[in-house]
Image 1 (cartoon, rainbow, N blue to C red):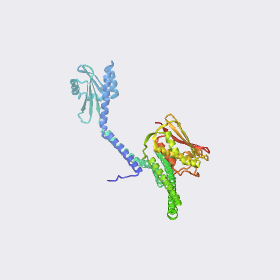
Image 2: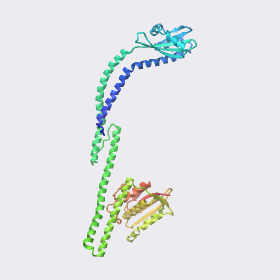
Image 3: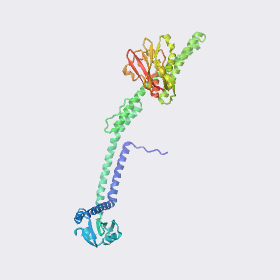
Image 4: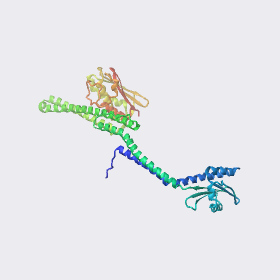
Length: 462
């Protein structure tokens, strides 16, 4: 396959402008030289048609002949009236058109009268073969006829003058087009070249570049603004990617190190001691579970963000659903944690039950991790018009307002010094956000410093 030849923008713009100028010049030559005679003849015919209409209107007036004098004077057309086998009116004897044509028009007049038509046109070539005459015959009444004619004078001399004039114009326009097109193409392409240089730097990982948006071309400024937004977005994405890699690497490394260390301990030291061996194996199992949880959360988040995860909607009771989840946290009662639930009566909802379990589990785990010294977590369901509002509240230190918009990001922690009871993965809230967005459910967070934080979402009624 033949590769398409690529040219720089300023060369293309320069070529297009030159071609456009040449096309305009060709049009002028064709119109002024080649088509001038035809256009001149067309214009004369149109002028004669207008005269014909004026004569027909004048015939209705009392001062018909006076009106004919005025028409002939204004248009320099020869007008003759034939009535009752004579010519009662002819344009002024000083009108050259009439004097020349009287001898030659008799046969055409007879032809028109015998044709019994209301209007008929003729083209008459003079005997010298250099001049045409256009004749219109008009039937005004039973025995009244009007004949109007106009000569088409040769325009060869005019064409010669126009040729010389256009030759000079063509040379001047071509030179100016080359110069103007060159500078205009450079002016148009320079801002794009600068944007391209900055974009190349950004493509190489340099996000400190700035795309200038002070051009006098609106589209260039719009493009620069869009590229600046893309730079900010890519910069943030790159920072999140680096943080994600660092956190994932750390979270993967820790359980892997523990698994390896305890496995070696079982192999080398405690394989004969049943109690020690069981303790070490339990640590290996716990760390394996933690590793498995991290991998599953990453896979779920990847599917959610890529749109590959399809929701499976079903009807279920929200109260029963939440109470079943709360029961799984009974193990934390031994450590003083308490989950207090306030619900409604039967609350039928419609959603992907499995994914909503992930949402609730992640929000409860988050509340347990961050709740205050009273170790209480509150879950409340409120009936609304078309949905149920679910609120999960802790009594911890709360979150600063400036940090609230970041807490849904992967691995973002508002309090990086907190002590976790539940081993999370750092991407739980990001999973919550993506599941709720995919359901098109409203969600959010409210927090008061030193009083606690409430995460909430609305789930649609069935």
